[in-house]
Figure 1: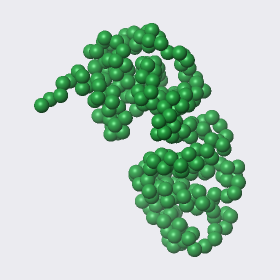
Figure 2: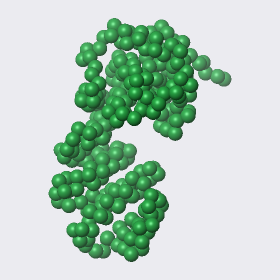
Figure 3: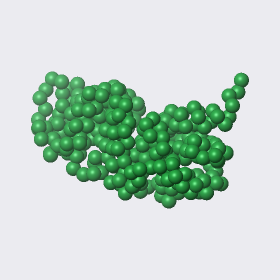
Figure 4: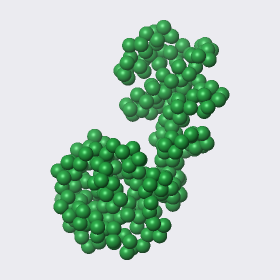
Length: 301
């Protein structure tokens, strides 16, 4: 099994199918032997790569088996001696636990990650997973505070007390910005490449999701920031969240129902053209279907 796996691994390159076959063979071999100190990190690493391939194919149970195999092979002082590999495996483990709804395992992994990350950049994935864990436990206010803290560190500050006049002032500015918005206009924007801004958009998108449940008055402030960031730094999938939420905010907080509807329709068109359209449609169903679209477009018989 070891020989077969090794030969397959050499010819795998970036072929996920061959890589997974190779790792399966090597893992089968590992059941009956004690690996040397040199072999353990090598096998742990190829399992981490196998887990990435399995996650990309949405084979989450398969990914879990590779993650667990990799984690079992980490050394006693792995956070010091195998930091990058440990970070990969624990982040994937927490993500899979989140997908599977295993709150206990997710919490345990996050505890390890938060205690051992060496930089702010390395903490971002665990911070986003922590926010998801808090939201899954209906602790929306804590999830919101967590995201706002991360955004502050990313240079995105928000007023502590958000009043209706502040919201209406933000929306009046965005009304002018989006007055003539079209799908073609948005498509002319370059892709967003600034990593800091991409991370900020990710946390802003998460905040919108939690705010609609717990603190709706935040939505106009968040969505206006997302729209401005998109205009200034380029387009990403989270830009769609910002646009749709801006349309929803115009619809909910102003009397400009027509513009709110039009912005929502632009967002809806962009969703349909996105490779992640199913996730985006699910993510934005409240904003698009339950309120904005349902109220402006009467149900057809």
